[in-house]
Length: 472
Ligand code: SAH
Ligand code: SF4
Ligand code: F3S
Image 1 (cartoon, rainbow, N blue to C red):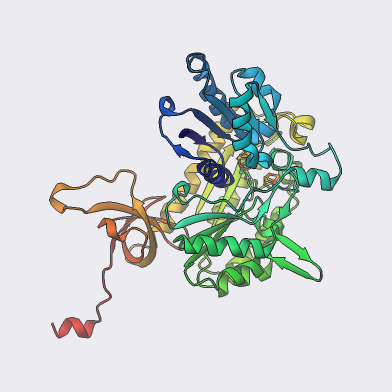
Image 2 (cartoon, rainbow, N blue to C red):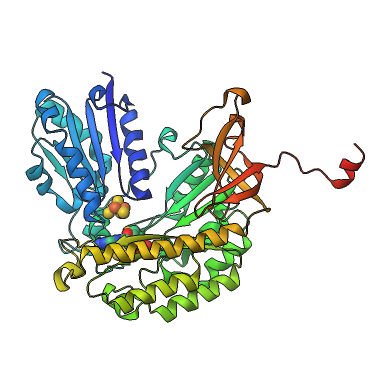
């Protein structure tokens, strides 16, 4: 029987990849995708718990299905991902019409669980062990990875794919739920990663983004040999069809010289480095248990700038963490000015049940103060992004053309000419006019204008030598 799946994904790139894999496994069982709830017989929400807002989004989407499920009791509703692992039974309590709750470590069971619900009715829950509920090995095993199944239709574009090299996180920053929802840090075997990269290349991928919560902490030990992220990059670089390699997210303390050397030496490796600082104050960093001081972060930035002078560095910041004073916030603002990040993702601290911060510290910064700091930091960052983008005006950059821009409209008089969008090797967004056939190519584009987050350009169709011009 033909089944129709509706799937909604929130959260980080890990979730985008998990959704791709779940869709791939359901397609094997004859499912097709639909963008309409009314068409669907199976509805899945892939969820995120990193901030309260992410959870609220899912709970209100579920709320909207209450009446709908009364009218269609035969349709299956599933909640998967980090919120499933974190809230577990609470999801059934808040939304009793949900049929399935499946953690990120049990995604491979989804097709079977859906069938069970259809056959036998009732609710099903599959989740991993908590971080105190067994031996390290048992906990590890309960967070099974689910990687080989891929589905090209679920990728950001046909030429870009994510590839997980690591699951989980062992850093336990005091504000963060990820070590609980994704379990212990585990690196995947290098040979599996290489094999998957080759499959992706054969499917037409030009760009692979390696994923891990602290991707540069990746280590895989077999007998005498340890493979690091830098070793993986050298091996992946050999795959001829792969033109670009990226990796996110980096942990400042693990930004080692071997990795920086790989970024400098390997032309396919993006010189875009996302290395979240979180705060500019040592006292706050310590309360966050980030494991480094601001002096360590500065030293890392200096090594990074020396090794890869043209690198584009970006960061994450949490404003309004427990006890953050105005003066401590100012230190964060200073750090942003000093480091001149390409961009920063800025978040208002959101207390998460089960974390050390929630247990031991008071979420005492008023919402308005968090909002003010958020706006202020964003304004500082935007000014820097704008200034630094201006240096590109008149330059030619290499762009991987991803597709029509969000606002693209076909212009009658220009035939097929579209507004296209793509990214440079250092992750800057470039918008320009071009024919649809350019999508999926890597092209030279000359930049003629910029905004804080976008550069505007025109395709350089051919590099014409001045001598050739003269003889025309
Ligand atoms: N593993 C990545 C990021 C994980 S979550 C890393 O360590 O860099 C992405 C970002 O969300 C974090 O970098 C942090 O800035 C933010 N974040 C995490 N927990 C948060 C919380 N409780 N409140 C607000 N922001 C949070
Ligand atoms: Fe969360 Fe810290 Fe791990 Fe990142 S490093 S996932 S912020 S605990
Ligand atoms: Fe959210 Fe889980 Fe990613 S909490 S940020 S979806 S790892």
